Image (cartoon, rainbow, N blue to C red):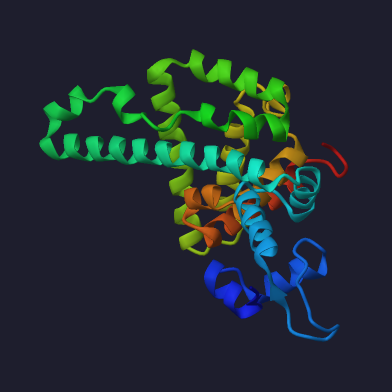
Length: 261
């Protein structure tokens, strides 16, 4: 059985233009009855597309996705690994929902209930260790080990304070984006400087010892905020993430000497 490009686009939400690009770069070859015939996709292509979308959700670029697909051609085992990750994410989200529901319920009951809220209840489901494999693959085992030790050393109160700081930073980015500020404006650049300091504060982060993140690390994260919906959600969606990216790019151009990492 074969499906047309329009059918695949409708089923997946991936645009026809994107599918044509995947075909052109050899990532998702289509099947044609003739050289100039319409693009058709078989079951094998659909399985490959599913894996592409899963890897894309992890923030991998097309080149990295191609390498993963070419190096791991056992589709069943690869999808089983994806399934484990998806189920873990599903459980984490369920815990987050329950945690936020408990917080809302306590806040609605008044000051006394608010005082009784436990940090472990408020932060349940927000455990950063779920990203151990992803952080290790992106930035190395040492980066994860050091940041993990630092996080645990903060204690519950320190973790809650950091969560508030992170939340405030995200809200300021969203407000700035909604106000349609120029990414190069003084207001946007002040937030960008706070953002850079926040990144550099984590032991194990590239540039931590220097008190500011490496330029490549900063710009790589800026691009990831747009490419990965999980990050974009922290800034009000893709449009907000694009504002953050553009502001950080301006900050990087101003704060780092040309050619400096």
